[in-house]
Image (cartoon, rainbow over all chains, first blue to last red):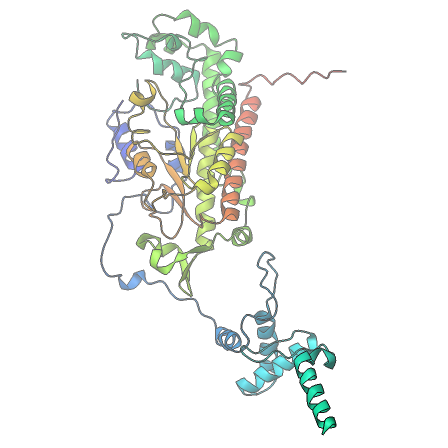
Length: 169
Length: 330
């Protein structure tokens, strides 16, 4: 039962190769030829844990796009949008995405200011049926409420009493 | 008794036991074809279903892998005649038919290594499949492991995004290696300490006739196996980590132990894992159920394909008698 238990020196392959070369192991392991034919991209050498500041070449870039500026303004103004985000479908377009597509289409057409473009895009989307409600703005309901529903019984009673009092006098 | 993996040719099996000529041999050493030292773990006994499954799979493995000698009438006399003292000399007396068998086996083993993608595993998945399974999503910036930095595409609003182009290449290499090891009759051990996917990993292993370990890892499982599980235990030839971390977010002990016992490892490394000791690391998400199901499915298909291919090749080269056609009951 021979082997080398030094996992911090060399790779599995180099250790087994050297053990075979020196005659400690007689039989080739099952995986040896396969490793030789298809080596991994990087040698599986043990790397000591490094503590310290990150070096310059270890930098991971932030991912930002040009459209992120418009997305940020959209979320600031309108919040997430009227619909729920359904991420289970891969071709799902959220309200923000539709806004973005219309915005970029308008931008390519003419030379307009950003705020003006925003208004135009909002109008187009309203025409298409996507209602965008500003964050914090009062609810503008499109359905009609019967004025009778606004009556309050206490007010009516008070009116009646003041009316009868006026009649008496 | 050594822990080296038993090769597939009958002559090498004999030689393996041949060097015990001067020592006591247990009963099963006299009949190497029938009694095959098999990897066991007592934790499997807890799960009845799994135990039955592993028994069935072990039985299947014993029957199909390397036990062509039993079906092959030309080979059996040599084994039986030298019972009592299996010597190296007995193994070297080879009839021309056995030599032909050995040549055929060598050809079977060497031919797949010449082709780039012998098992056509690159058609199993595409970059879009990985994206849909959310393999590219990593942890937050603060959890990032230093050594994972080369595998990252970037950082979107503090969440690390893994470079799927690199993942595709690494996954291809890893699946190819797994397939070749399975083709050569190697034992594969699937390890994952994530309780959420414990059942998935165990059923994957059962479905492809390999082994799984998703419970508490005893310290001497690989390093002290002959004493804990009896002499003559065969260690796995490949350990596949579907998650390299244990329940306290430290690297799984199995990674270091497999490297110690010179066993190659394949592992899915997330952005908070250490990829340095793994032989074939695959950068990818290990938290999403969709991603884990994808990996399990890919490994299962790979191993099954490799084993079927091996059967095919053995039939082709005349090493195995084809199974009798199923009798139809009227």
